[in-house]
Length: 562
Image (cartoon, rainbow, N blue to C red; front, side, top):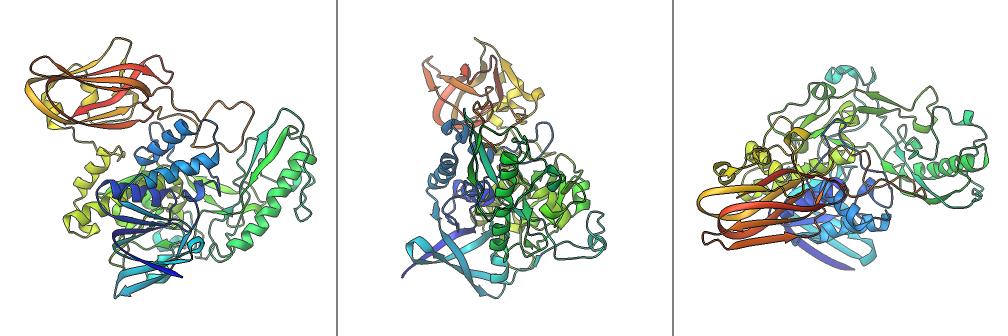
């Protein structure tokens, strides 16, 4: 056996979307990170092992930006055939591209060493390399979903449904219990140009008629999220038991669709079935603040807001697939958006333990809105940024400068409701022919500069100025109606492409005092948020759009110089 030790600023356990975004954000802000993931791929429920598409806040212009949108757009660019192997490699590439991240895949955390109320180190086992890793860190971030560091550290946590009376909520049951939302194994199908037969395994369940699948839509465009179990069992220790039952159901549902009635799938084949269940709920930490249904309904206007949600309070019945009294979930309304505070990501009783993802400090009712993966991703980015800021300033995370943190997040293209990004003093004192590009608001049609061929944006300065950075935010079609990846594969796929609104080719021209021109020429942009480092002393600065990914007009939220 081999033993490796690390000393780092931040150790993150869990490489789902929250852990990945937390790691990238912390690394980009200059601290050392060790990211421990117990699977061979990153992404958690979004990975090629589980294949749940990434959902987020509902509502106009509420799409999550920052790192999660960067990942979406990179996938559309690299992965036009929509292969999950490529999606997994995009996530891997994002982690490996950061020099401050040490990535440990196939590595499971199993122990923690404590000094009073502080975690000193954790131990993890890397199966494929037969290696023990011991990681000491200033902060530990649990982004594992199941909150593995809770039982190892003695951190306070919650499990199950609170009683209505505990937090004065209306959604929970009258009496507290240990029931949760369940987990799902998904399957995906592909259309072919010919008829395809299907023979189920002998152990699959049989559903003879549609009456055997009450309240369960099973047309070919479904992602089969309702194949769900475990809410009445133990959503951690009964995971394999759930998988065995879920596989029998999955094969039975596809057998029903193919062989028992006309479901329009004669030419469709079973392409993939998941052997790793995707989880919705298990342990939730107790943090400095527990977000409740009442906080959600009050829009979460916290002083230390650092992220937001906007999914409905989508409360699945614990019986899951076997709930036959009606639709298997209740969509309780939630504001779009509502805010999440930094305090709900900081342990109440373990000094250097923080967390992001579905395991944050929320009641069961609030979790039903905050648990979806795009929300988890921006929580992760907020947490990684907060830890980096705290470590650099020598403060505790809970004592970090909140306005400064909020500005840092918005600078990194993370939207924070009811807050406005500060625009650079240099950009504000220049003359500009398009004030909208320097208003500090990077979403909403009313905040777009829209140009046509021959149009440009010009900054002019009274004297020659030093420009070190140029910040751009393009229109990424915030309200597009598709996710990161599809749930099935028809012969002709019309969605899941780079937004046509993105500007593809552009020039940036800086004119010096003597009339000579500094030029940046970008020919293949595919991102919403772009920064260019320059070293120019100039009297004017011009943005010249040349082409888009399909849109006739040129659309830009922000063009700013520093």
